[in-house]
Image 1 (cartoon, rainbow over the protein chains, first blue to last red):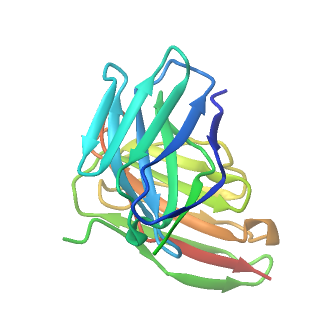
Image 2: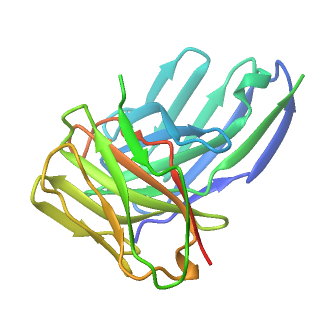
Length: 110
Length: 113
């Protein structure tokens, strides 16, 4: 059974700092990995999708990497802003199922 | 540009009552799924569908029923509500079941008393 772990559970940083969120998984037989953002009281918004054959994806200030051999993915956020405050979740697709980590709650302080 | 629409947004049920959470998408997606999100448990898959007429169980299917008569709609039925079903429910869809971005609804907050 796929298990997904996100560390840390919460992170507080000052505005402007570069930061890295971590996601680890136990089964490397995945089709893809997605990073999501969830704002309080809202649904999830997909930020980046990395196919299993890819190593990284970039969108604006966000960069996600995937290392299947070590069972790890990272989400790098450059020059963080207060508007980046949210919970960030990673999720892996294998078969027809999406398995989520519990998320990292990020607070960016002005 | 509606995307994935869930109704109702909030609902309070008494133990033993039944109800249906509605989910509709207007993107002609084949894959639809239901998750519940609980503190300390993350999001867990309840049921999913890879196309009209095809459904399958996820990680926590007990107490829930689904059907997929059309591509657009994927309702989730609570057969006899229990306090353990108090949760936030999310519907999601994607073009196919693998290799595609997944879109989520805004969520349905359900309280069973």
